[in-house]
Length: 288
Image 1: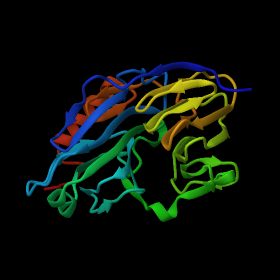
Image 2 (image 1 turned 180 degrees about the vertical axis):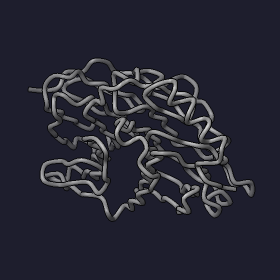
Image 3 (image 1 turned 30 degrees about the horizontal axis):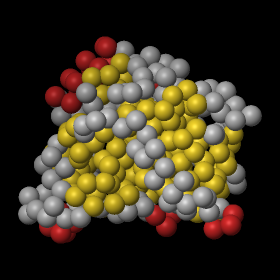
Image 4 (image 1 turned 90 degrees about the vertical axis):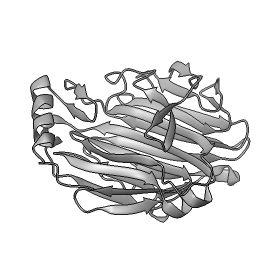
């Protein structure tokens, strides 16, 4: 049985800025409530944009996170990052940065220096994925996932391919380790190409049309639109009306309270107060 579509959300008229380096359209929680799309807490999409060459490196300066994971998917351009556990690196097109903030971390992310000087198309997605209560105090850590590590599904008849970042498509598993069941598929379809996949009916499921235009289970979805599925049926059929890139995400809901304040996501307000106190006491480490 095909999954029914609950709603298709067009891109907002105007983007917002995160720092001075990320020009984003927000879909979660802007258009879909966090509890409705659990375990996903946020989805920001930096649609393709050229910031132009600059000697000033744009980005987001040092900031804390606690209680969840951040997942950054690079489509165009390069992002560098540092955190207070000593991790650093650069993600290039096709790479994914999967950071588990857990018990607390300081982090900064910015346009990679050479890319910043050169300028060029910049296109990224950042997801926030909630952690179950039992895992919110796990030590902060980081998964650097490069393009060549992705699980890869080649579609029949040259229709395109799927990079499996997390979860599994058929027998092909993604490299990301997750704390609750999550599927994250980066789908590339040629014009008139088609992909069919099966997602558990119990999963909260959505897709974002990064580029192109598609038909999803019989309904048209334009470029930059966000498709939210009902929790019934399992089959999703995507047909490309032109060369298209689609991000498909699904996850088993975490049926626990959500208390959030900026970069902290816990289960109660008391835990939020504790997170703020821990941050102010320097328990998240040091990052300049």
